[in-house]
Image 1 (cartoon, one colour):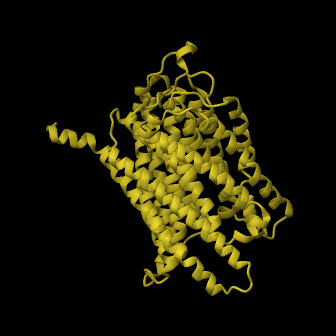
Image 2 (cartoon, rainbow, N blue to C red):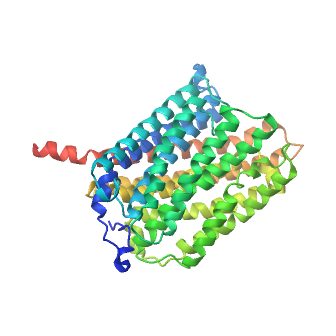
Image 3 (cartoon, rainbow, N blue to C red):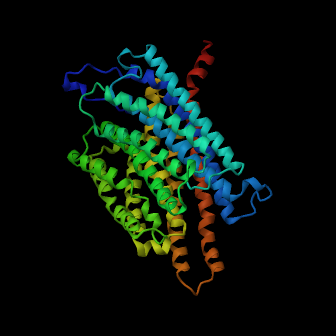
Length: 485
């Protein structure tokens, strides 16, 4: 497999050459721990999502166990997908990419000295704290101690642990950017710095106003909608885009198409991203200007999406490289998912259309496409690209990787298509006063049944990835055991 070499600015800049091996050695353990934990949380989240989808067609499934009801399993699955998998994988990708793009080992110019060891210990401690908070927060929801705030269901003590853990990692990333040795910052670095600065602000503000010291109820809805949109558009998506901007041009051995547009796309995303979730308020008891801002932001979000598509999808491609390189294929599919997110978001932000599909699976389809498509697919690409370079050897099983790629795309495509169609049909039926609610539920039953199949495929894909990464990390141990070392 062809691997990207980061960074590539030293050739003509006269700067001191960067030893990528020393950089990888300095971040190897924290990044591998983050990626490994993220993948295993993904497996658990996929299993819970399958159980939740089964409960939609068979409410009595596991009905004898009171604490395994839909109201607890659904937020557990969603939060594990957001904070167990996506955010943790984004931190791993961000650490590796920032170190590589800045051309600086974890401990700075002294490499693996005392500074590097202390920073590595700090990040590993923050990683342990993060996973402990996710575990305890999930158990709290399981025991019935959810906050009831969508996407912020963890109790205040668990969310405080998550914020502290991220700060220990994020501050280092910003400081590393400040002492970079690669000259002018790349587009990928813009997105990484923005993401690592935005998450503490977004997560801390939302928890402060909704969980730690809740404000008046009338203002909680807009803040919660702002948080949902900002978490995706200002934290997870910028890390995913940084991964694609950093790796895809190098893997394809070409420059981004019309790179001068990247600046406009970056600033448009930052300006619009925070408003992207306000379309959830359409029809709600909020000031009209808020819903209008959400409508405008939903439509204008197409501008940075199309600019990113021009930059990255407009590059010339060697089909031989694309067909044989799994990171490239994941990056490209993630970009196509982002385009679809933009189109669906623009439609869903229109008041007339939103009035039909607002309380159906259509809205959930957009959220799933955000998390599993536009965010997760590029993060899979970084994982497949980074792990061989961190371990210094080819470690992936190509058969398992191929099956993971195919089953993920089939499961995701099936899930999104069924949710979109099911939501559209259900919404149209809800607007017809001659159709009873009982008939509407019968219309949606086939879609929910097939969604179980799609969730099963996604669970199988997650299990294959889990087996593949476990096999990869155990390779050195098994080799030494076979040779008697």
